[in-house]
Image (tube, rainbow, N blue to C red; front, side, top):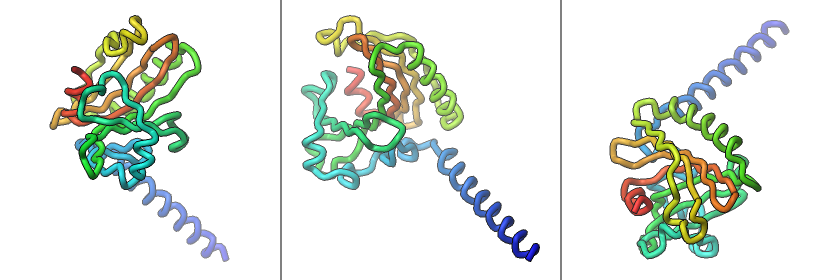
Length: 197
């Protein structure tokens, strides 16, 4: 009886170790932007694997910096327990709706500068481990000029990690109209050029 109990304990330990090893491997391989997931979504995947065309259309949310571009953006709430909202970007005319941008957002009900920046530092610490081979840039405080009509004082604090193909991962605190959002995202180089312009 004692031998059987010891064997059961040993099997549990082995299962836990195998689970841990495979979990660690999926986190440690992040040299390619497609390896990084937000709520199971990844760059290069088809949005149609997760949403119907009607869902994408009914959840369109086009920010000012995407107006008059070839990109659409759809945003969804209730996609897991980590984020309040998840947004994806894809080319409007692309029939496959290939994902070029993913962003998870934590929405604070008021201006919460210190809380957001503290959370950003925690996430940045994890991203530094995950993306240890990538170039990291803390951009400091930048004005959100694309939102000047909405709020001329809008600004954000982005930290980026750049992949070999110039695509990026980013974590940032956004302060717009006395409201705060923490945004964690990944985007292709092409999409990045659009939003930077």
